[in-house]
Image 1 (cartoon, rainbow, N blue to C red):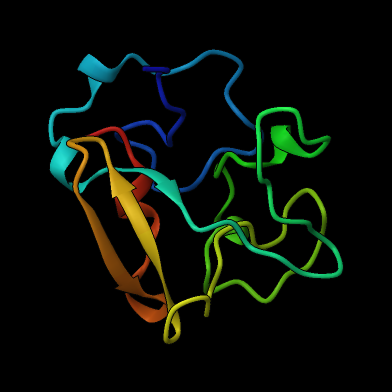
Image 2 (image 1 turned 30 degrees about the vertical axis):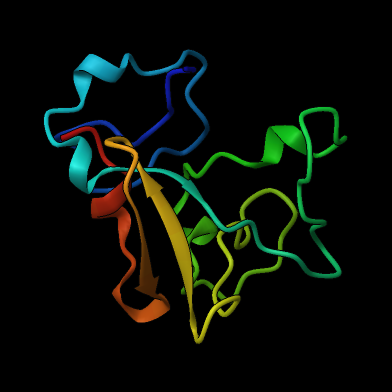
Length: 116
């Protein structure tokens, strides 16, 4: 399994740019509440990533608050990356402990993406 990228513990705000190295999985003290994967947004500004070889594969990480599903930004770099209404105004999320759950767009925040 690959390591994941996240906002660092102690950081009240998201990163200004993506991390250059993966976070070790042992860093996460609460894998049950830390997101690993989410439904990818699709729009005129952003295709759905379907496989590892897709040209936009580097745009699947979430490191900016504008990437979250509550964002209205459609900027290719800093805009929404997590689908906001793929499933009844929310998305499905896979957590580091390997459970999956639905979270409504209005309930999603950076707390789910932080090193804990």
